Length: 111
Image 1 (tube, rainbow, N blue to C red):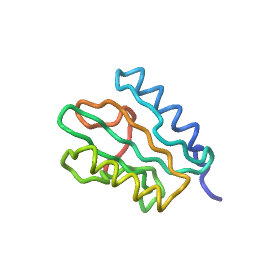
Image 2: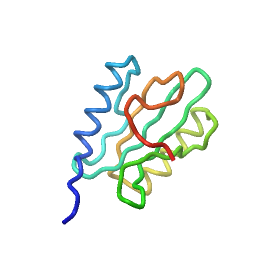
Image 3: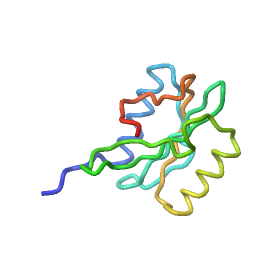
Image 4: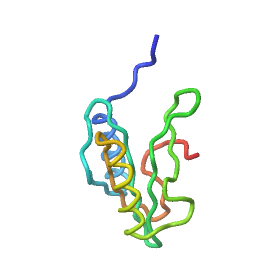
């Protein structure tokens, strides 16, 4: 039997609430499919930006990878990465959070 997964729209609402509660204010930059859309998370810090892309591990668990690499990047690099991903997946959600340490406001494994 397949494992039940949380709908994307519900997960997005949870992430925004956690971010706002912890002072890492967030916003939806692009609304995706409420049931099965993937998620990109843009983290904005004083030294630059980073994008986390939602992935699944080999075991099927939710994880994140730094789509723009390990070092902070500028707005142009973020915009280009997001545009490429949206071309590939039109159901994609894009969230942005203020994050001084470029870490997300929610728990998650970053690979």
